[in-house]
Length: 577
Image (cartoon, rainbow, N blue to C red):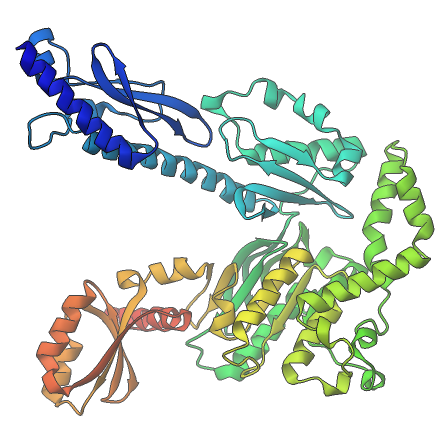
């Protein structure tokens, strides 16, 4: 028996050495008279130790011990019981270290993915309340911006190790109002428990309330961080729009199924834009601009909401872009207003302004102001792709450059929302990626909301997409829309070679297809698949044979989604009739 045990033990040792040679993160141990493996498990929010001891078959018979023992404080996070209950064996009948390591990795990865899901939920909660951005492309390190009526503060929060308390850094402006030390002395930190940790958004809400209390101003009203539409209808095309979006994001708008044609929905779209900026009152529902109903906002405050392009004075025709962009715009007002308002609030709350603030205000009319003005203009030209064209004359602009110029010029006027419709054929195939990059830079560097109507190549890249058709209006992301379609949006386009009426009747009755849309009569069709596209292709091949000229598998577009919904709704109506 002893020789048998020694042989089995040596064999287990060899198998462990072979397993850890390829695993890299495990090492061999010897304890309790047998060999084992150990490793450090890093779950981001917790580092811990795990050790697995492997006992021989002889040990089981002789000592009555289990085949495996696992030592780790991670039982609450990772349940290794399934390995203990059903261990893995090799062909020699002994325990398999390689297979055990593989199973442990899967369990650790599963826990890691679960943790990432928790962190992603924290991001969704933040995104539902405040403007925010990832710092250095780390998704769980966010710059969160809190917008008050006359100024903005920002805070950096790194919560990679959540549910442990996050690392918090205040901006210079925020640190003038409340110190990081004072914030960390709040009760929410003193009673922090890992198993019942507060959400990150609760920390941000608390911070926003403390700032308001310190400055002796009103706390943030509901929806103060958002453009919000609730059940808004305009004309015959736009029906029951409800949406909520904060600064730093874009909404793409796409139409389909409109019986009135392009002129009808362009007219209704303009009415929607004008309703948001307060110049059109002919709508139903509620429009709130950052916490205030649009009907209650003073006309002077509505100057921060824009529809572009605007009409330009003939006098700028021969002016170079670097001068034309600031024609009749008061740059001083654009970047002085927030700082002056905050300094005034700080003074009223009993805070003494720093020397830097005093000198900044003193120098704002001099060289300092001129340098800031140049940087401000260059920033607007850079994010719209016109910086290297600033010496070009206004009357030499191409249609696309003119459109970019209109956006850049608007950026100098402290916009909160910019709305525009991209003219058909303005963007060529090589322009879409560049234009989308401009949009992403604009919304993040200038902290505004962009509402865009245009080609799908631009709209599908927006943060939220508003689809409008003759039956409904809806908002969501591209993936949310496409995943609503059968087979997660996979469609098959087929071209047929003059099939008979009998073949077409059989084709239209195929059970694996949800909907068939005719693109060219008796020739080209788009198929929305109920199940298994491969089996549908087999059905089509068997049905049409040589009459199946070609087929192509693609993922549905947003227009495909709208057309699908419209036609499905019509079929439902027909069936009900």
